[in-house]
Length: 261
Ligand code: ACM
Image (cartoon, rainbow, N blue to C red; front, side, top):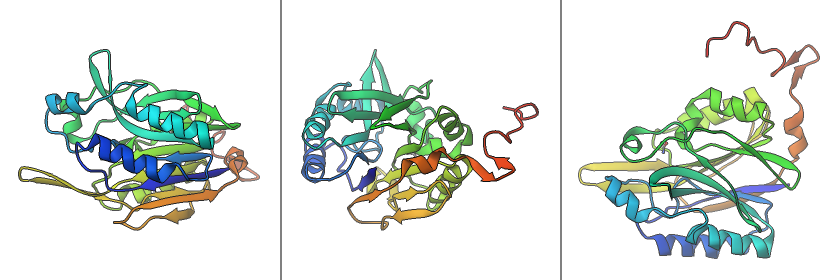
């Protein structure tokens, strides 16, 4: 299975320009699954709920329509971040889209910093089968909560798709390797680069998107500050093997009888 990510530097509030860049890059990509960063169309550094409302879109909507159209030509599935509006709420979402359109939406469950001022938390995890392989979705800061990835792995996820706008250097590059290793899953972290400034505050995004194997090894890591569409061939069955030794299994050896959750 060919999986990958597109790391780039979205322009804040430039919805059409960012959509154009996605369309141009993704139309000719040869992959089964491509993961895009968190909020790649709106940009990330939102100051107020009013600003977020202007940049939000529904699912299905203009961005998922573009990705659906590409998918129906190429067969590639996409996981994209999206500033979603639904039922009067705003969500920091990840959407899985294929030739049939949006397949599933995951709403970020652990909100970071000022996101708490305008986003509503999601309340669900799910896995979805594409091309015979189960995938799960998390968004950025979710990486710091081992329970989230563990839940997806227990639900059968073989590949965790992780749209991100990381601002704390090196942390997720480390944690996502550990999450992949402790759950024996593939991990695709698609992180943007560049910076966004509002008044006297600047967010610098760390790039270095990465694909991690179930043994925690780095299959590939992007540079910190350049566009990169990266696609690689993996064997998803490797993520079904949960034995560590002939005596040990990462799921069966868990001590749920004594853990505090
Ligand atoms: C983040 O959750 N965007 C750091």
